[in-house]
Image (cartoon, rainbow, N blue to C red; front, side):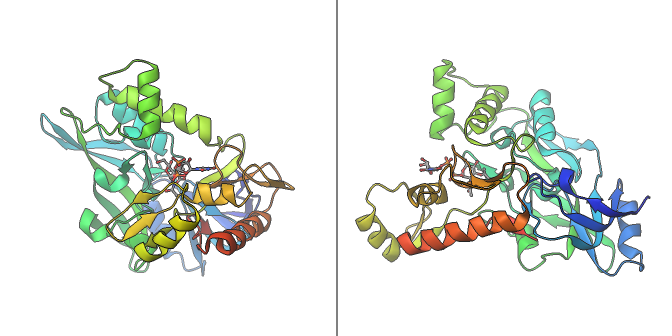
Length: 337
Ligand code: EPU
């Protein structure tokens, strides 16, 4: 394995931030990963997946281990279900398309989400009414300290809205090497109730959508709202949608009766951060090369040469103004490094 020094990470993070790795190595198998984890020459390590959920604000003074483990394998199947395993370095969208082509259902609503398969459980990716946890069966992960590989069940992952045990108690302790999904071969549980999906399908007069129809609808919606990271650097939603309790929600609604919201439970309400940011006046604004996307205010963008701190400054400006106007704190969804 070739360990490079002072390697630019610009092409390995979807924000396109030009920070450097002091040391960099790409690993293609679990044994290569374990070898690099045990190499005592390096004091600090940083695990890099698809780079789609992070904002680099400084060079990384560590050995960056880039996970490029590839492979897709059916582990078992019945007439109705299939257990399929994807290695961590598989591109997520390509894996979703592969499953759709094979007729395996469950991942179609998660089409076109940037990043690699190995990182999807960490923040329990979700879109258009579906979350990763709905089809997640288990994952394999290497414990960094002991270099042993263990399996995590769905329960052990403690999934929540954009979170899991890997973002909390076990943060930076494990490297996920592969993920197993339980997908349907018949009687697919299609999730088409999300407004924008229904609009797309009815525009095309589709009454009984196939998995591909749903995936195409999701791709069209995402393309219309979200910038393509290959063209404009971004990390998808920069903040989580805030959840507020009933008491605060009452006050909020009295003051802002037209605000959209989703009821999470009897006592919890989610307010779309994109709406708050738009109302705070940031939608489409640009400060140098750092900006707020014109079609979806929840997405911060790098028009070319912004550095991580410029994006972070913009994020903090947004947090401050949203807190001042609405009294609501916006928690970043992206990992700030
Ligand atoms: N809205 C605005 N202005 C904006 C953006 C949104 O008023 O600039 C309002 C919309 O009108 C709508 C509501 O906010 O009423 C919700 O907007 P949208 O359907 O675009 O979804 P979201 O809540 O902003 C979440 C996810 C997205 C996911 C979509 C669709 C989070 C943090 N984000 O966004 O995930 O694609 O739902 O399910 O939960 C991502 O995580 O990177 C991501 C893109």
